[in-house]
Length: 335
Image 1 (cartoon, one colour):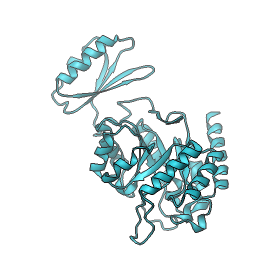
Image 2 (cartoon, one colour):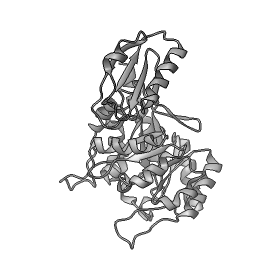
Image 3 (tube, one colour):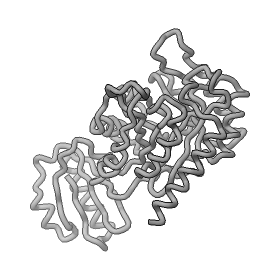
C-alpha cells in the first residue's frame, strides 16, 4: 500500500502517521522526493482501512500495490536511487564505467590493467578473486589472495573495487571490498542475499541466466528487506536458443526495469556476448537504452588470459568504448 502525502505537510504530522502505521504491525518505507512524499506500507495490509487513511487531512491519495517487491518498487520510491561508491555516484543521471579483468591473475597484471582502465575513464575496478566455472578443472581464482591484490591495485589507482562473492562463509574476506557482486548463479541464493541485507555495502546483483525481471527484483527485495538499500541491478544476458553469442543481451530489460524500479541498472556486455568484438556495440546500445553504466572485461593480454579471454577487450578498445558511449549520452541529452 502507498500513501501519497500532500505538499507542505509538517514533519510532526508525518511522524504521527508513521507511528500509527507501525502500531498496526506494519513497516514503513519513507521516500521524500523533490515534489512529493510517499509512505510505503510493508506487511499484511489487508486489515488496513484505506478510507480512514484517505480521509486524513495530510493525505493526497492511497493505493494498493499488487507487486510483491515493495522496497525495490518505483511506486514506493518515485525518484531514482543514487548509490555512492567512493567519489562515484551510480544511478540517476550518472553513467558509470566498471572495468577490469575477468579474474585476478597476478599483482603485475591487475595493477597494470587498473592503471590503464583508470586512464581511459573507468570509475570502478572489477576483478574476480573467486571464479565460478562450469568445469571444475578450470582456473578457480586466487580467492583471498586475489582480494588482497585488488586492494593493492586500489591503493595504487584510487579506484574502488568490485568482486564476486561465491559463498556466505567468504563474507569476512569482503570487509574492505567496496561493491560486492552476486553472480548470476547465486541470484537466488536466498541465505546469501539475507546476509548481504545485513551489511552496509553496495551489492551488484546480476540477473540469472533464465530469470525473469520479477525474479531479479524479488532477489533485490531479499537484500533490501534486510535493511540494505544499496542494490545495483545488472543485466548480463540471458540464455536463449541462440548459439552465435554466449548469451542474449536483453536490452529491453533496461527500459522495463527503469519503469519498475528506482534501483540503478548496469549492463554487462562482455558476458552477454562472450565475443570481444561485440562489446563496444553493446555498450553503445546500453548507453542509448538508458542504462546507468556498463561493466566491461578488460585484459592487457586477452589471448593469454586465464579466464574468458575471448570476451575481454584491450585497454585501448576500452578507451574507445568510453569515448563513444559518452558521445551517445551527450547526443541523447541534447535532444
